[in-house]
Image 1 (cartoon, one colour):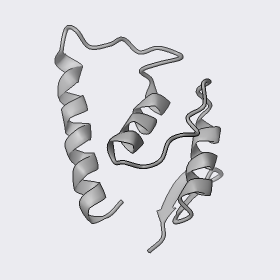
Image 2: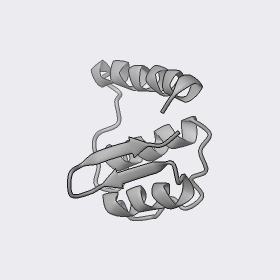
Image 3: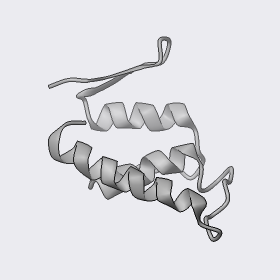
Image 4: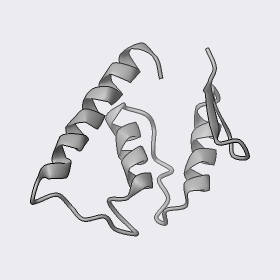
Length: 86
């Protein structure tokens, strides 16, 4: 992510980090409030299209959908590398 998206994402992530110390923070869950819902919530905050949000959390499906939707994202599962093309 570059430019505007990076700054907007960083602000949102820092806000979420500050929530870690809140006694009312939502607990981690298998179906909500987990690493993949974090990613999709961030995408929604950035205004990216997440109409395809699946009802079941499957990380590889999320990554594949992002790659289909945003062709400048290329995730290499074998080497755990995310490349963003210009």
